[in-house]
Length: 82
Image (cartoon, rainbow, N blue to C red; front, side, top):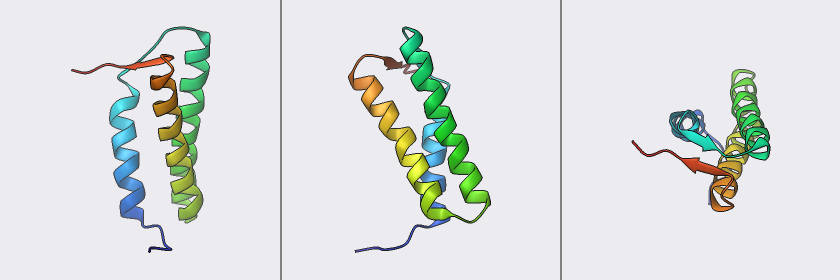
């Protein structure tokens, strides 16, 4: 069991979500709102990482992934595959 968060792990998940975020199609104002929230968590992740708070940084990137997964599942987002 691990009890630490590394910058490498944060960067791995941050890089992955940033590669996807520009390839999301939203269908309504709720989708726009959720995409805004997802981007806010991505921004928070970077802020916390820059300030050395790796736990909050990791939490923020995980929240961005949760929004992506839930909104995709509910049909609020569509991930555009190229």
